[in-house]
Image (tube, rainbow, N blue to C red; front, side):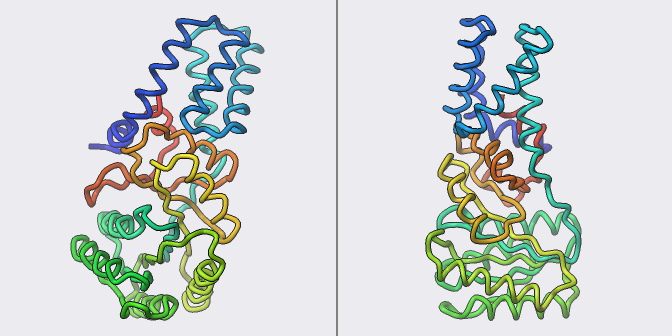
Length: 298
């Protein structure tokens, strides 16, 4: 199954919600002020932020009025084009090798599972992969990561529970350099984004990577649970202020009926979505595609 099918299937709950309301809107209202007001409400109810919804609808309205267009299909296509442009306001980083990818985020969003899926993704690209188990606060996290590493058939560098996470990162970087590893994936502990000491720990790991492996491309990806909607947007805003983010990994996209916050992430925060989790299997992680997301959204 290709990415389009996977994302389309993953967005079924969102699509069912939005499409039904849009159909009713076109049946009920002529394209005018009342129409645009309700269109804005539909977007907001799908977890598009008020600011982004207003901007999108205003642009649809201006272009439709300028072209003197009141055709349903034209307006619908115009809406899709503008939403796609909104997603593309945050350009996706080009992944080059060797690279280090550090995953950050709050508890329970699926970071450890995502590390396993990313390992499998890069192995599928014929890249060598090492995993650093830098979530040393939970023994269960290290155990879980070992299972994922075994399933993806990649190496893992770990220390004992309670060890210094930066020491794990240092050893993992040394190992990756010695073995000329293509991709080093770093799992980190779930952080309450208001805890300054934990944020400082992330910054320390960041410094270790930059100092010890300056030749590698370094990406920091925030893992967000798509089912949390606007709360995910709030998390992204705080993490962006604390850590220089390169992108986002969306998990549980198949579990949400309100995927609209993604447009706000890209349009307002200018953070690109790089990967999307579209199921529970090891291979259910895909590179994000703006066009296909919009098609799936409706």
